Structures are given as C-alpha cells and as structure tokens.
Image (tube, rainbow, N blue to C red; front, side):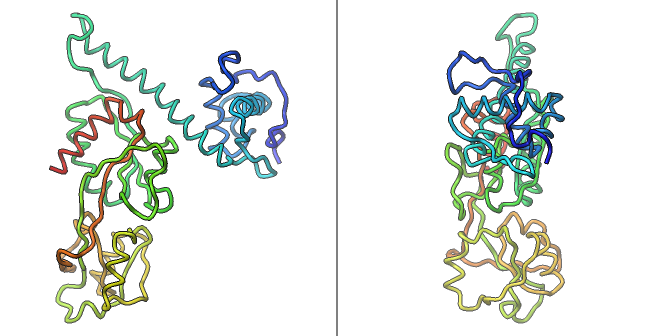
Length: 323
C-alpha cells in the first residue's frame, strides 16, 4: 500500500487551491483537478505524481473538499482510492467545470480575433479549440464524419476528438455526464434512462431490418446472430410477437462482426439502418414492414456545453445531416 493512499496524510496543503473563506461548498480549480486526478489515477500517491505535488498535499486537499461538500468522496483501501457514489458525482461535475475553464479561454480568444482592428463585434466569433465527442461505433463511422467535415470546413480552428464508446451500461451518455465528452451520440429511449440533468435531441429514427445470406432458401430457419449493444428495448416486444425468431442466439462483439458472420452464411440478424450501411454483396436486406421496430439516435450534452459555440455548431451540422 502506497503511503497516504488511505487519505490520512497531513501537510500544509500546498497547491490545494480554493478560496477558504468563499463558502463551505466552493472548491477552487486546483481542488477540482486533484479530485479528478485521484479518481483517474486510483490513489493519492499516483495522483500526486501525476500533478507534481506531494502526497500529503493531495490528501489534505481531498479531505478539505470532503469537508466543504459534506460527503465522503473516496473509499480508501490497500489498493488505493476509488470514488464513492458521491465522489463519482463530484468528479463528474469537477471535469465539467474544468472543461468550462478551457472553453472560456477558447471562446474569449475567438471573440477577440473576430473583433480585429475594427474593435469588438466587427465580425462573427472565431471558433477554435477541442470538441470532445463520444459515439457508438456505427454512428462514429457513418453519422459523425459528414457533420465533422462541414464543421471543420466552416471553422478550421475546431479540433474534434472522437472516442468510440460501447452502448452498454452508462454508454455515451455516461461519458457526457462524467465530463469526459462535450457531446455524445447515443441511442435514446433505451433500457437505461439518461443521467439526470442532461439535454438530448433526436437526430434520426432508424428502422430495423432482417439481414441474411444472399439467396438462402429459408433465412428464418438460420440461427439468430446478435451483439451485446443491440438495443433490446426497441426490439424486445416485437421479438416476443414473432414465433419464427429462435430463442438461442449466437453472440458477436459488435454489429460489424454480425454482418460479417451473416455474409459467411452463419446466421441471420436484425439490424438498424446505420449498421446496414456496411452490408456487403453477400448480405441480403429484407424489410420488416410498418410494424417493425425502430430506434431513435440522438445527441446528448450538458446544459453548460449546449451553450458553447462549438457544441451548438456541431448540433447544427448533425441536424442538417438528418435533413
């Protein structure tokens, strides 16, 4: 056990930051950075090394933050420190607040450049800086690229960072709530509700279709191929009403693998339209009719990110893609 990972160290709290007289729950930027570092490093000592601080300063800062908030934020143990439920929420807010500091600088610089020699307000704001996006695989492949192409053509100073996140558990919406993404492309109305406080909007409604090997005489007799991210809530009721769908399924890693296996004659599958864009010549697509299942794909963001210029511009491009 690294000394101090229990959070019991004492020290002067150098670098802890925060205005001590500004209210019991107000944390300064450095205190927020320390909370995030401890959560990401998994311990006080590792966070101290990452931040260039002493372990006692990190421990002192965390204890001070817990006192201000009035909740235990980390479970201390032999293996390090892990966020409590209160800590998860606090660290998510800390990431989001620190992100706003970055956006503040980027938007202020852009407004200054737009003013030019004629002074403030002489032109439109210049968008610059990183925009962080989380998307599930087929959206990252097919929905995002055209929107990002238009966004960066109009605003060359914007630098997109796209992370592919599986739509399991918290999924892309969880990345937004945790402050790791400014905007997520998510499946809406799925088995898990959005984390509280997030904003969302529908970008596309996609019908599911039956996919099977080309020319197979009886595709409904094939094994059903499925993958963990498939949005069961969109298809569950429909599946229950179909007596031809077998109960036994073959699991694959993702929808791309499902399509490959279908093309190899290993089974049939029910896939949404974004996934079907990768269908090769060995795959036949058969519609499920007007009563077939449909999923909603949309964006998810926070209220503060929704007010930033880059996120607003990206949402406009995603909506124009829908049209």
